[in-house]
Amino acid sequence: MNKKLLLIPLALLLAISLIAIGCPGGQDAEEKTLRVGMILGITGFFSVREVPDLNQARFAADIINEQGGITVNGEKYMVELVVADTKSTFDGVTAAANKLVFDEGIDLIIGPTAFFAPAAGAVCDPEQVLRFNTWVVHTPGEMDASTPYSFMAGNGSLLTTAAAAQYLKETYPEVKKVAIVTPDDGAPPFVIPIATEILAAQGISVVGDPVIYPNETQDFNAFVAKLNAIEEADATFMQNGLVFQMGPLVKGLRESGNYKPYAGSLPARISQVMAIAGEAAMKDVFSIALTPGDPGMAPVASEIIDRVSAEYGADYQLEMTAPNCLWVLKEAIEAAQSLDPMTIKDQLESMDEVETIWGPAKICGEQTLGIKHVIASPQAVQILKDGVETSAGWIDLGFIP
Image 1: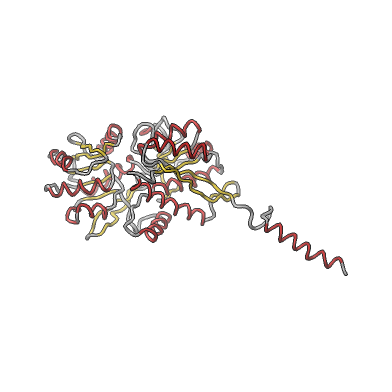
Image 2 (image 1 turned 180 degrees about the horizontal axis):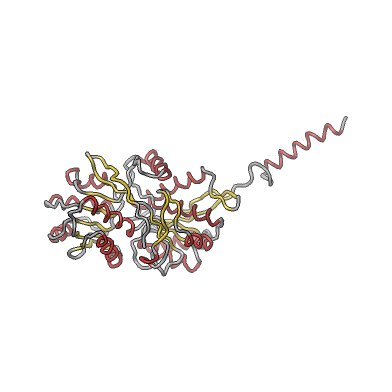
């Protein structure tokens, strides 16, 4: 038998075997994974906000992976989200942070939200873990000069307040004075001065004492009465809160004969407010919320929302802050060409703009918050028109001092 004839199939067999086991130069080299932690309240009272945000982040991760993952030095990393449940408690936040940092060895984290953030910082900051807060209400230790490893990449009261104040001035130029209503979540002493300054920049002053209600409030009649007592107010300005708080407040005001404009500086879908307050109550009510099918929405955000609507229904709550955190993290990693948290942090701080799911956003906030860690994403306004929640346009905040 001719030995040369045997060498050809043996060589082919060896080549096929090398490709099959993923050797260098093979077409199916071993896939790399980037594990990103998430600290969210999947159970407990805050789950009404956090579960939708988690589901939306999963779609964002799917889109990143479908596009080939995150590229670092020529290598592709597929995103894997590792979720730790806070159970909507501060102790739960600490436990979740410990689990991700020490048990899972994760040093890139999305969350937690707002007033829960300081509990995570106490664990993460000493380990130089980079965090992207899904919301910031500006209590100390969320994101300020004392938190060098925390970015406001999701959203926050600073941004929604600026958008709501601008829309209020443009749409209701006769409004010169507002009464503020806000939940007692620890933020009022810190966020109300910020809101007052932002409103003043639009020529609007705050009158009366802020009306502050406990987060667990079920009956809002007493707080409606306090708002009505501020007779000199031309409008009500709701600073923070949740949809199941905005609905009863709007309903109570309208039933008491108060039809002044109601500005919701929060991402409460108007359709859900209407479900509580009734359609007749919704005249001159707006919120900083997202509308499915909005033609002014950026393509990535539209794709995520389309997938959310297909999976969970068109009326599903749209938080979309965790997806934006993930997208900003992806952009920062690729700009830095590194997975090292400190290199990523330095890269973001050196940039003036970053791509978000909403389009380009300024990186700013050094004067206002003492640190250049604000991602000033464009904000959507929503109203009710002909009984249907409708986009009232977008406000590009630009640079936040």
